[in-house]
Image (tube, rainbow, N blue to C red; front, side):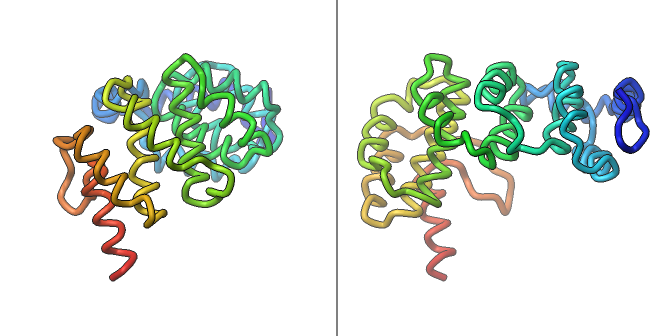
Length: 225
């Protein structure tokens, strides 16, 4: 396939391969991401290509992680069908691809709410983590209709034993309930203190700890300051 900028998919694949940096790959692989392309450089490639949805589908179909990330930058999120997004999410096992698909594409889709409900209860914890991420989006921006105390019940019961990616998504939901909903803040902090999930997570200087009680306290301090 030749793109509207005159570049073929094989040429793009060769370009991405040439951008591979073994040092970046080594860092990424510690987080489960199997590519070595600098993301700023990848965004520059996407800016040059502009939006090309057919190209995005071709790049996604290669299965290559860098190509899939590029696909998510040049696609039109609203043009993906509901089942297509479901298939993409289930194929997105690399953390960065999973995160970008949910954050940059699914959240902008007219199918986001339907997929949120379906994924939230999925038996696959990686798929369920996407449902929790979309739920957190609603907790912050559109909480009407959500059972927030019920979400806290589920978090309290399940988060400590949840697999890593699902645990992370549930923890973010816990923190955002505490940050965005003052009436539930004390309970959210209490759940975090009892479960102690991510309490010892290494945090760089100047960054906020993902440990929910600390995260909640810091964000509330900023809001009130």
